[in-house]
Length: 194
Image (cartoon, rainbow, N blue to C red; front, side):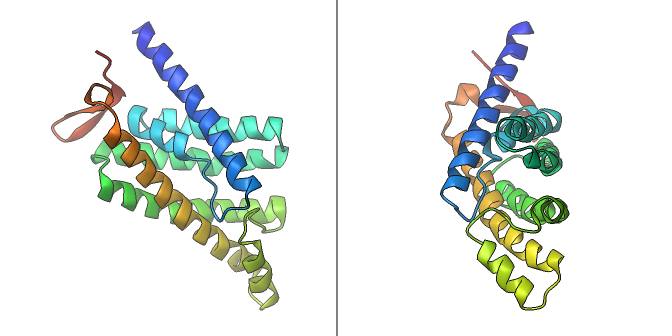
């Protein structure tokens, strides 16, 4: 039992580091995506919603402490993403279709939560290459919410669907002994180590 808790803790730590590193790379390159939830999604699929939410929240908290306190409020988005993925993967087998649908759900839900935070913290900018779209939409007479939401939705469509599909392919390519065990079609959220 203690060994399993240590493994979970180590994997959660690696997932947090992965989120931070990929997020920094995407931000530095001004990519139209975030890449900061792949670790959260992986942990949520494997260990359930509360571990996923913890990894997501811890990622933003650590990023906020190390780089910018303005990142801390976005932990709400990451916590919700971890919960949503975890609950979906507990209910349904995380196959390609489930991964795609989960990504679509996240790509709508995350910007709905993140847009008001982004408006409050950054004045509506996304910090990605789609900031020009925000400026154009705002100057075209759209409300700040609409001007901020549309670029975030585009970012999230690419990011969340892509992240969920990447996690699906990572899980699919893993050796069988590390894959999720299922009982009667429902996921049992642990990794079986032989």
